[in-house]
Image (cartoon, rainbow, N blue to C red; front, side):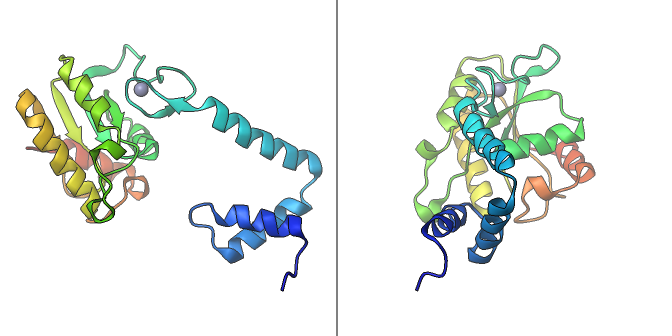
Length: 199
Ligand code: ZN
């Protein structure tokens, strides 16, 4: 039986498709939106569409950005010979917040997920290898999450980049097993970076 109007049901269904939003949250959000002043709803809808249209992947590091090349890749104050490899743009943001890292990044936009058959072609690894092939890279720091998938990803990248003869390192423990970078405090992240282990 349908308790709600078709429009409310559609709205709840759309919201339910977002990650981390279950039925109850979707319902709560839907009613919140319906009770918002119409111009706020229009502004929200507009912001969503504009963000989706204008945000793209940096053509160097693959992070999400407004420009063709992101501010970090285009900065001459960064050390472009050190690349920190992270899974998501939010991980890059976590490291930027520490203010302790002066290199550049490479954002894989995911990780290998062997259990689901998600392989190297499903992440931005090829772009990383191309950067390394171009030369001038002295160190690649693997800062993927310490989950099973993050570890598998770090191992794969190590194997593939080893032949290029550059320094490869993995951020140190201090990042708890299974830990997601975005939830870890800045001091722990800085220590993990300082204590990175050469592979
Ligand atoms: Zn970039």
